Image 1 (cartoon, rainbow, N blue to C red):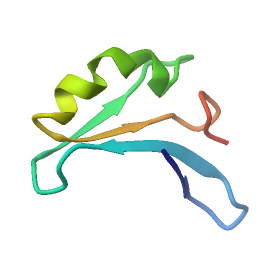
Image 2 (image 1 turned 90 degrees about the horizontal axis):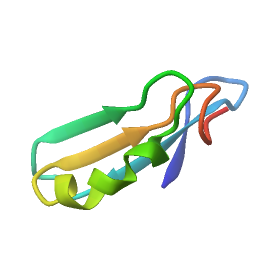
Image 3 (image 1 turned 30 degrees about the vertical axis):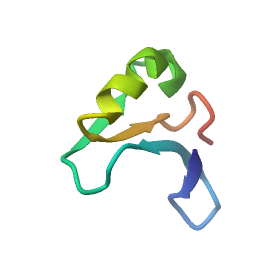
Length: 64
């Protein structure tokens, strides 16, 4: 997991990247009021087929 800085105030988006970077990218975004952790059950299987990127929206999960 990493925090991607998105503005000059230091706000961050929590980002999880898994899988082979050479494979097609698949971005997972949770619903309102959730977090990327809600999708953890599919991370392993999807990362075997894609370069998986899961984010927490601003104000939710572990993002600013």
